[in-house]
Amino acid sequence: MLSNDMFRKAFATPEEVRRALSAGRPDNLSVILDRAVARNEIDPDKLIPPVKTLLRDLLRHHVMMHRVAPSEQLRIAWVDSIFLPLVRRA
Image (cartoon, rainbow, N blue to C red; front, side, top):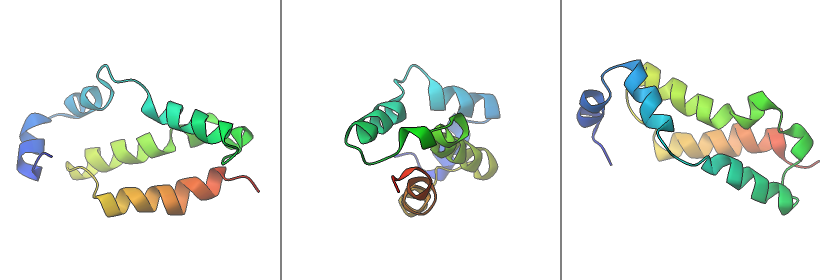
């Protein structure tokens, strides 16, 4: 894991951060969401575009504003307290 200083040096501009977040990586979040839909854990009708990209958008915003990766505790809170309540089946 990068230290905060190493992170700031490696990603000095917003463009570098954006590239790093999307560089040649498969869209793992879509795979995870598809599997959750298949297991009937989340409602596919609730996966409208802004909800589908919410976690990625939160991550991007945090990195851009704070120039550090979000803590594990914050990422867990995003998933458990924000994202899952939006997409769970009723």
